[in-house]
Image 1 (cartoon, rainbow, N blue to C red):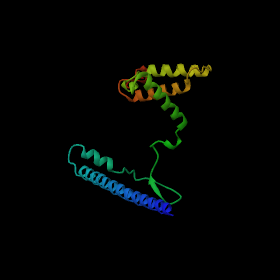
Image 2 (image 1 turned 90 degrees about the horizontal axis):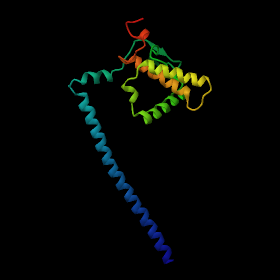
Image 3 (image 1 turned 90 degrees about the vertical axis):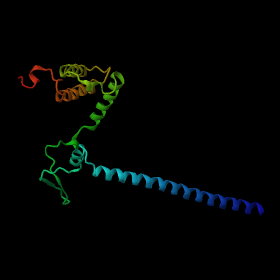
Image 4 (image 1 turned 120 degrees about the horizontal axis):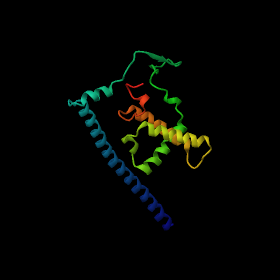
Length: 175
């Protein structure tokens, strides 16, 4: 009987200590969260009242652009028109995943963002066509279709970058 009372007392004491510990932890965490929220709000307040040269850009980024045209959904909800913005919902996400894997391998082999330094489009397209040729001939020693896609994507990227388009018929001002 005495042993039973001891164990019951021990369990009740443990529960009480556990409850006190949890209460203290919640109070400490609550204080830290209050400090976080106060700090976050002060940053937001300071950014909204910032008068330096970036404040115009920040204000522009906070505005919601509106074409004035609307798409109405069967539910009655409306949104700004979609035309001309691209259809990201139609992208081939499995192919994009493969492209990302190819980028990862390239970063390991050549270094992070090496290709962003600039590669002439003729080199990228030459490589893309070579990879497509390997793919069409059944070669499987590497993922040739994925490599071709990467080269074409980078050729598009380089064409948009000044000075990297070196194919005479594609250079601006030349036909």
